[in-house]
Image (spheres, rainbow, N blue to C red):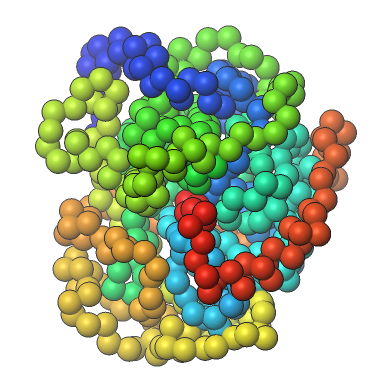
Length: 466
């Protein structure tokens, strides 16, 4: 849905008011970057350290794709879900220990549903353990010039030793765009089909705002509502990063305001994103009280339901201001994912086998019937996927909304097939200006063992990361 120029120009008049009205978000780390040139168009606390939540998973994808390019792992390599991975708190796929999922399918799940168990499965499959994978993340972070980041895990679940910045998240996004252009469809998958279920992408702007083509949202009580958004118009692609927004709706509206302003008037640049100076802030603030304190008991549910964050336009209510620039969500052609090995391949699985307990989720036959009640009508006539099976999903809401299930509209660019590429043997860029990487503490290194024990006793302090 494209707005006529006259209508869009009239809507631009609300941008100044719209941005100002977003209140506390103005004081949160924000950056707008031209993805092609690296030029900074807007910045506010852009290099301040922040808890990145699930936007961390962009770095997890960067490491995984780099390992594929280096020939260390294949996209068809089956990764084994460990007991530790299965113990992660939501958002998660909920696969049983011993379940196999290929790296290709795992990456698609990671970018659409943002499952914390799959992030750990990727980390363990590539590096053997979460601490070892965190070391890899920090090594690649220095290689691409990140200055304000230290990673302790692959999913962004809260850890005081895990932080980043709006600038660094923009640099990760730009590295993915420029170094792996053939993989960009990974970030704009609108809907996954897993067996008889449809899983919509939680990015509130994808398919609702013209030009948005990814990339990742994130939420924890400590970090607030974060997002890395990419949008393209003509030959220009902009990146907007917002950290610590107070709600999904304000995060979405502020992203729209910034895209509208800087697509319309790029103005004078503020230098290259890699050259921004350090912040006076030395430690990320913990927003737990603001985000999940008294009166915020529904914060996690709001995060999980962020797909409906701009529902008024879907519900038929008249939209005003910035919301008028968004439209009912496009119907996406579902991208199929499955568990188990890719048919026709014979690649040995990787991952922990000590606590593997294969069950129906890991061993279901490809031709196992799906109960008719669980199959959306739009998929009833779809050809069967030889490897698609039904496995438990941890969260409610994985089934498709009726509008998506009934639609049969094909949206360009929503399908995705990852391509393994050979690594270019160019010398790695030295990180001369990078801050010393903080080595994970002994306590952090023991986190996996503690987390496994803690899984049996749910803690009220744990919050979802998305």
